[in-house]
Length: 297
Picture 1 (cartoon, rainbow, N blue to C red):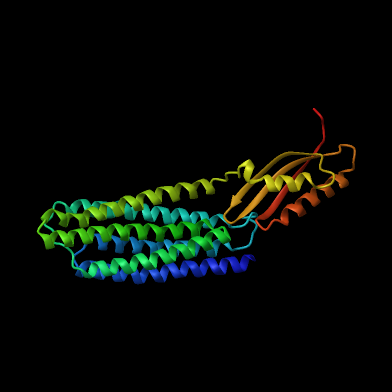
Picture 2 (tube, rainbow, N blue to C red; picture 1 turned 120 degrees about the vertical axis):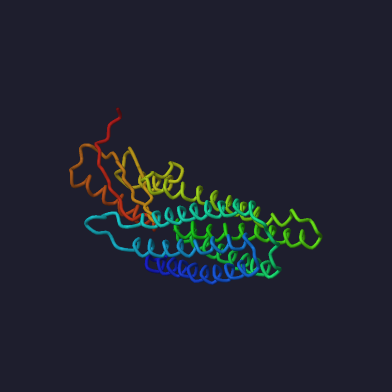
């Protein structure tokens, strides 16, 4: 997939998230207030945070597609990872706020939510699961951490909506059969929603930070690259190879050994062939080759 096409698909997916979450946040927020459901209001806040998350992803993608320049010779691919971290932080804050609000509800007199809250939650579950599947598959296809994290935002909303559905239904049933304490299932669902959001935020944030810290790919993940290098005529030994992920692409640094008695120009040409072969891999953006004289020692 060409770079421009990749970014167009990713940006469109981010905008789908923005507008989809705006509609859901308004729907769930309004119904949550009218139907007197803390769980649904918490779920609406979650969807509202997803709007900010999708916007962060959109801005990150815009930055990531900028070509390399003097200050960023390896390109701007890590802007996607930074966007993913921003999304994770937003989720973490929202999770704590929802938890705080739900705990406070146990110290107040409560009434069961109205039935209309159930319909809003069911709509949210269907829409959010569809958005998750669309973004997750696209993120895997175009290798975008930001889109994948954004997809899991939608999946966390599915889980939180399902928890809200159980809480709201339980509270309504409790009121109808005269079991007063079941009304607290609504804020209990809000607490469950908060726990899910915090857990997902922590996992996704940790992974995105790890990807941003210039970690190198594991040896088993670079086996294909190593095989390409040693197959180039004139390469007597692959001394070292490090592949670093920069968002959706990879930068490769390697050292190879060549015959110590050939000319500098001949050694340079072998290095150029190695670089050209590695760049045939669509995931590799740049290659730095260091030439060593071969030695049995």
